[in-house]
Image (tube, rainbow over the protein chains, first blue to last red):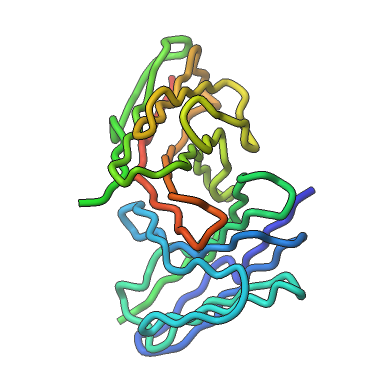
Length: 110
Length: 114
């Protein structure tokens, strides 16, 4: 079946530290997005990144489509970065169905 | 303000009592979809719609219905809710998911079926 795996499942960081979150997927993708779910449950789109590298402030993401993985980098973490990070993929040949990973729960400690 | 609006935010109901969760977007998006979020399982797609009168099943459609009579609205219908449908539900929209267009999510509806 279709697999979208995220690691690590949980991460605790001291404020100011850097981190790398990983998303592995089992097939070719048309679409890959990263989301942050804040402690109030809101899902915020961070990146649309089916391939290549993008940066937005302290966050950046890289997708290597040929090797079927994506990385989300968080630099100089802040307490407001806490929450759950999800990757979602739309696999090739599955129409417009999106598959989410189970998320990485990040806690940033002051 | 561009947004996806879901109602209600919280809903407690009893087994078998039909309910509808509404979803509306004001961005003229073609694509809309519904997800449920359960602990340890991430988000799973229930149904999606590429345009008016076009709907397709996602990964977990059993026990749910949807309709897309207007571009802006995409209600989720539970004809006979059961306790295993207790979950956090999200609606999302996008102008075109395959064309550098991000998914925009509503704030969620927490449903409890007793």
